[in-house]
Length: 575
Image (cartoon, rainbow, N blue to C red; front, side, top):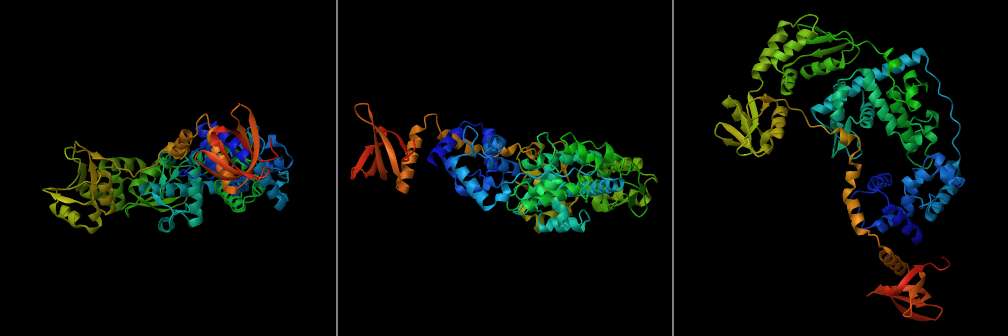
């Protein structure tokens, strides 16, 4: 065991930071770990419980290779999990834990069965899968738009909070919580949302996704889903193994059956496999490792339209699926009431005000609707646009360059008085400053607090021009996982600084301390004053003041040896 620790510590110290961060991540190492050097790392990674958790993450082909001592078939996985010696063979304690796992579950080490060939979908099955894609893509767009308005709260398990779950179900964006969880999972694989603190935050990449066609939306998420699959489900050419062997791939992982079921459900929801296990034509290229090709999918998707009917009752009817960029802009100023191939939208004072908050104005709204409408702009809608624009912007939020404070202004003194005494706004700490209210809180936070309290607010810059405001989003760089290395920066810096080139002394000290704790017998090789070396077999009993104390059973005496004279130590019977 000590030799395993030393070999692993030396090997880890020679790895680059990216490889170390990946190993720490797959081994479940906390970035807050208080390890001081790579000997600490090796000791913890070689703890039997830690090894058992790592072995449970090995796919069946790797386990089968280890069962036949075919280390070459397992070398990459062993290296990734830091379970191998420098020659790529399992470390001694790893072999011991593998033997125990094999004894308790021999079937887990059996070779993978030959999978059945994928059955192509018939025309009816392909049409059904395409309809599923269309529906799921629309629901995902609804969830992302809701997240753009306000990040979705998440629980400690990663699920969307009960409050946001209920809100999305009641709005018709999703049917139930299971669908919402699946949509968030798909969005995460494509980098459309990231987990930040206690929220699911929509990334900046989601904006371009929302403006893409359904086929383009499908391709991006499909490739993201494929790249996020566990290594055991991926083929050497970048595709995935047959779905019928997914449940058998990680036989030692206690929760793998549930994970495999969840992944298959995501594949069905995104039209990568039919409900009967059939394979739609657009999934074939993905399974073989090629880029997503939605050309065959386009044949089954409904044609997108670019016109709607505007009604006098303040509704808009799209007789087919509206082109995503048009749908996106229409939903900035209207509420979608029904979600289907033919959708209904409704204009309200609140929906128009929301659009104006995000940069729309009366002239821009009229120009957009005039081009979009097959029936012109009805008089009631025209009046609503005017009246909303007249009220909007009565409260202005800006930053005072001279003081650095945020100012809240309004030409309506009564409205400003209402803001000043609004109990919901007390956390802002607004104070009277003559004709304005001021606060130390940042302009954006003040703006959104007023907007959420339903005040007709706009943000203005130093020249008095209106600034379009958007809820915060995460970066695509974060979504791509670029923060993995950054999350381990502190730990890696500590390990590098605590582990130098000449660590023989540190390792010797560590071995001696461990032997004293366990009162182990050691073969201690000591350099004598004449330059020669002599070996003693001691039961280590104490270490302090630069000296090792131990019982020499052969001579039946207590010996005290200077640590500075000790050349090496080893367990009896080893060389």
